[in-house]
Length: 331
Image 1 (cartoon, rainbow, N blue to C red):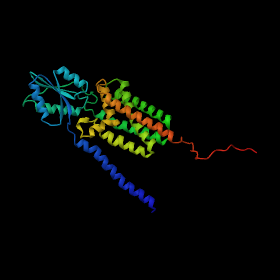
Image 2: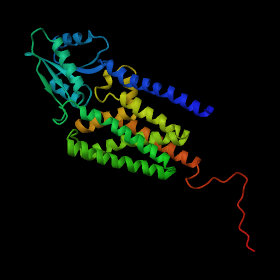
Image 3: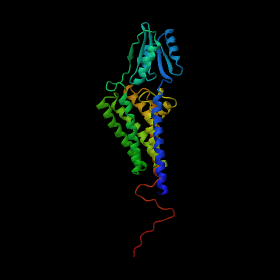
Image 4: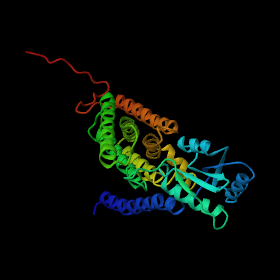
């Protein structure tokens, strides 16, 4: 066998197990290490009962980030503003737990168990779901599963623009147009048909479209700068790391550090957070995620435009340096 095919065969034999190993690590390790890490939780009520409850939470070092509130109304406002995931309110009848399953059903269950453990033995802890997940998706499974298709759609758009040799402004318009249509179609499915998101329809479509644009322009931008290899790098970054580190199925604060933080810097994680904010919390705490996605989209589109200027347009051969076309001579 020739040497070149042998090298390619060895590359396949070694590269596929490496990708499989990295994939298993990226998806399995965070899932196996889920636990609260500085999880924002509120404690409301008058001292000294509230102080005692706070000390019980703080016994789990590094697990919770405690926010104190004067009363139940202030704690509810903090939950609706996505400052905390839930709060324990100390009353004369005993502790009461406020949760927001729309923010994370996993965290709601975790807080319910923690509140019962912190309460005196035999004391019932009533639970109030301040911002409940929709009836069509009470466990948040559909919302969590939606991020991977959006990531795949973004990667596909970036790859197609590259393979079809679209350059410059044409590539940018194609990416923006595809992302906008994905936002409309995805919202029609998730909101109008399945009912798993319940916010303002067009705001949700905009959040989905911005997420797809951030992913697709990132992939196309990498390909425009470094060549077709950029498609593979972008796909690994967005699908392998971005999806597995997003924390959409649980919460960023439940993932090992720095996985949770990295996930929110990548478009899939930021997109999941943005969609949850606009779908259930009237846009509360959406600014950071929207800014992250906008930065990815602008940087990616800028790379596409810069790369288009550096490369000749498709179907038009580059002219050799120092060679000048002569006019056709007629006899």
